[in-house]
Length: 196
Image (cartoon, rainbow, N blue to C red; front, side, top):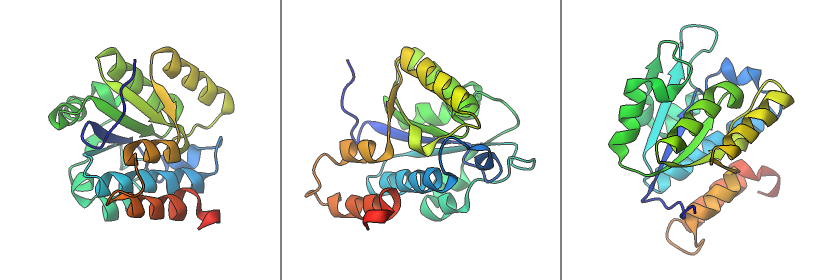
């Protein structure tokens, strides 16, 4: 039985949203994944949800994290966990320590690519007792098949698959609350720009 994700119980983990790695996404338009990632970061900032960023081998082809993250959550960007090559971020001691430090039982995860960077930490976090929602439209894979297999594997392991607009609504609960108008603005500007 999954409990509701609230701003007070959740942390946002964005894994390897790097300029080079994001070029590998082929199952969704790159711009859609980028906008949804930005929307998640903005939502977390408004709702005071801890944000943990991690990257892998920034000096190689993967490149730096997308610059928008530095603009939105500069503190999280500055303290990002720069992995030397560990594939599963959950196996990186600094990353795991940062997650533990939040004290939050609910983890919102997105990663690039889904089939390598998201699937393993999402499954492992569930195995260790966390509730995990994987935001599929802020993640992506090079192949439809590997994306589908990763989604099945996560769902079978108890990871809840979701989308950015669904997650934002769950966290907001009531658009009339003080932060509701700000969240709606992000929803229409970033997630549903054709309606804005």
